[in-house]
Image (cartoon, rainbow, N blue to C red; front, side, top):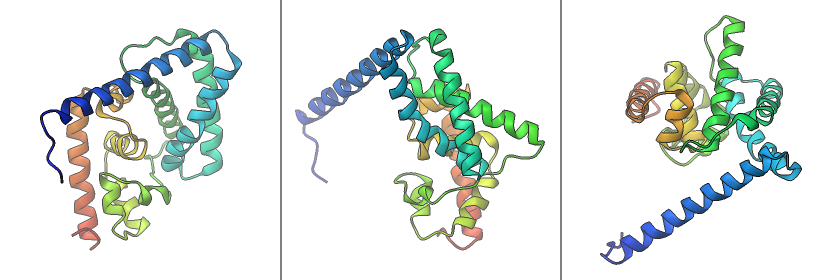
Length: 204
């Protein structure tokens, strides 16, 4: 790997910071327009988040139709609650997924059973973290078994961080935990998953 020189590192940082600032400004503008009931902005939020929220819910319910119905309900709640939303330094997506997570929790409470995680094929094709293990020709049943051995919050960290691509700050906002707690949950989840996968003879 080429060595990063003293002049290139600041340049890379500046580009990254500029891009992040631009994304946050664009998001703030979109939210502001949506709060003014701009139809295009409301539609953009719905169309952007529906597939992600539906996927997130499907991985936990294992029922694509139920996931789509719940995702529609979540996005309706998001749009109806936009007037009360305030930007507080965390991504808008963290607020959306916190609503989605609470809806899944309510669903499982009504069903009076332990949440079951059903992993779709997309888990195997994701790039980093536990999905790297999955890419090593894992059987989906073994991955599901590994996830089911996690606590509910550990599963949420894996789903939000490695499937949805959120950073620790956003995951912490969704879970209502500190960043340090998220890191600890991630570490324990990875240890547990690896132990289960090794027991199944899949992870070396």
